[in-house]
Image (cartoon, rainbow, N blue to C red):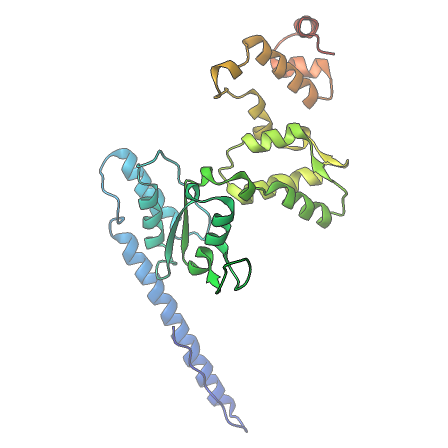
Length: 286
């Protein structure tokens, strides 16, 4: 885009200023209308890169067209070879960012140090051998799109988000919350985070708002994350608990969520208080 300047000599005339401003506003309106027209024409055409006529593919194409105009993060799920990068390219092509760069980065191909260097770049002299400044991929894709392929393989040290938000939100709310209890951190680690970093930030903010002590506890987390403690296990067969162990954990979890109130816990579990008492005695739950 070419920027042009206009100079007005003194003493200025108000009619002249009105004419110049009106002309500038008209040019801006025409430019915006041109951008909207180009976007409309793009969406009227078939989604590029992806071919197929099945109901599943049609559903994917419809979703791509709907979200492409949104300035938001998009999580694309699928096995290797199913076309996640093609979907990302299609979203970029239909988006207002399409005139800028599309950058694909495979998160599973680099160590922690190399990944940070590739994504964020470095200044000259930042480390031994850094003879010149190097821009990162995120900078190269400024106002464009970054596709983080195989993000689930990204080293955990690159995914530490929770403690940062805890410090940030605690300070903002003037609370002294120092850490997240291990049980709560375990649930946060096992949750899939479809809303990515923004969802994690909201969860931590909510937990800080609810907690008045020094630790974020399981009871501070939303129910849909707490329920992970009774999800189906996907580990090695030797790690799979017995049905009794699973029931014991579930009863303990419900009691913890209800501050040990057995009447309320029994009602939630759909059993009478006597049945709960028998299970507590059987599993030696205080």
